Length: 313
Ligand SMILES: Cc1cc2nc3c(=O)[nH]c(=O)nc-3n(C[C@H](O)[C@H](O)[C@H](O)COP(=O)(O)OP(=O)(O)OC[C@H]3O[C@@H](n4cnc5c(N)ncnc54)[C@H](O)[C@@H]3O)c2cc1C
Image (cartoon, rainbow, N blue to C red; front, side, top):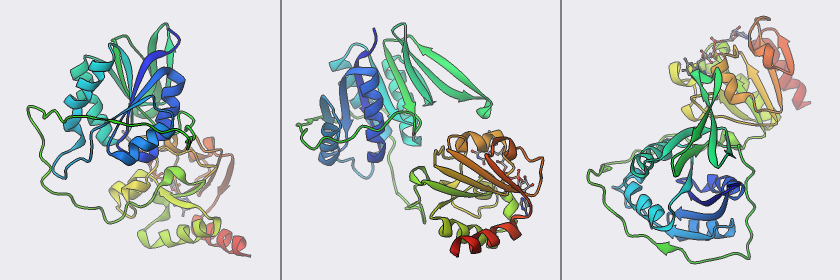
């Protein structure tokens, strides 16, 4: 078997669908997509879906994980073995676990590479907090995996393609989780994954007020602002959506400029995909310099404003 006869795709995020479709096309013959609503089904067909199944608009009190029985029934009705692909979002990882249990399938989360070897899926993912890669071969008839972003080429839409999605009847789980209220986050408009240039702030910035210095440089460079985990999680100087690393966001910008970031492995696995890494750090022995293409040893409080001024000229 050089390809799966059927690949199922489900995404809770429209922006991840093109890449999942790219993966599905590379790994499978027949691509079946489960969507939420008409807009997504139209997009799925433009992206090359052979069939689409629509769970409809999800009611406000229902969460996506509760669709596990609906998805499993659909998957089993149309395929005796298959690859099930989802994006590595929090919700989809929770859903993947439920799908795996119900399909008696092997599950791999946060896959960085997917290949077919001897008829089985081999998924590569980070282990030991990013210190190593593990390879898992899934030998069960169904294989479920959540995919990191940037692993496969996104499929381009073909406007001439269209189709009709098959509506799915909701199968209520035995123990539903009722969503009683939703609180919109104050700020989550940032999409670091799409930024071509990222200026990233570490604890070396000193305090929250100093972030304006990094912001001025990032504006002058036309970059997006990122940070290390302690800046977001411990100090709470920046939003969680901005922290880069194994437990944050994995990015592949053209340029990654690290300001006062030590360069621990857990951070660097999220930034390593950058085409060029630059670092400013006052400690010449900081691990970040092992990854940097260009490094400046010095006080960022002096260097960053000077750089910003130079770029404005
Ligand atoms: C399971 C696990 C998961 C983790 N996941 C992540 C993750 O996803 N992302 C992440 O970022 N971290 C993660 N971490 C934490 C990680 O190990 C590091 O502790 C963290 O990245 C360090 O952040 P930092 O470089 O900002 O701070 P520090 O390690 O405190 O480094 C600050 C740096 O700033 C420099 N500096 C200080 N003042 C100046 C100045 N004036 N000018 C120039 N340089 C200066 C210092 O020399 C130092 O190198 C994780 C850890 C664990 C255990």
